[in-house]
Length: 128
Picture 1 (cartoon, rainbow, N blue to C red):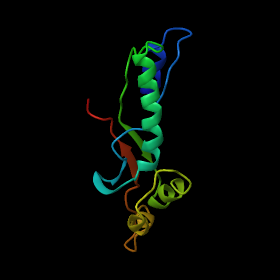
Picture 2 (cartoon, rainbow, N blue to C red; picture 1 turned 120 degrees about the vertical axis):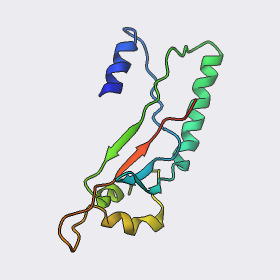
Picture 3 (cartoon, one colour; picture 1 turned 60 degrees about the horizontal axis):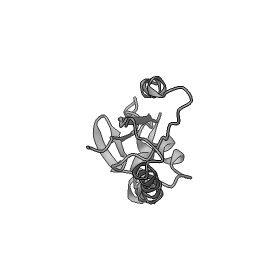
Picture 4 (cartoon, helix red, strand yellow; picture 1 turned 135 degrees about the vertical axis):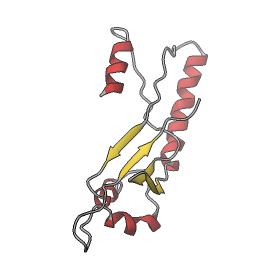
């Protein structure tokens, strides 16, 4: 919500906001600050690169004005690894096939009682 608040407060009334939501590098799946895998974003990056190039061309031609850029860390939390796998089932970004069996066990009950930490994806903004 902090990002949305900042965006709304910086737009002039009647202004236009272009939100290019594809964030590089590839999102990371982490549990308790431990990297489990990276999500393959290349199919989405191809389309995003084309959109970014089109916007950049409009800026260069003076048809759009870039007044502000807001890069920010994005996290999506999942109750379990199985929920994460299910969420990515119909997305262009892909989880590595070899990581899926291990991801499905995250957050499940262990035979010793208790459960493991839930998984989340994390995408960091590119360094400028």
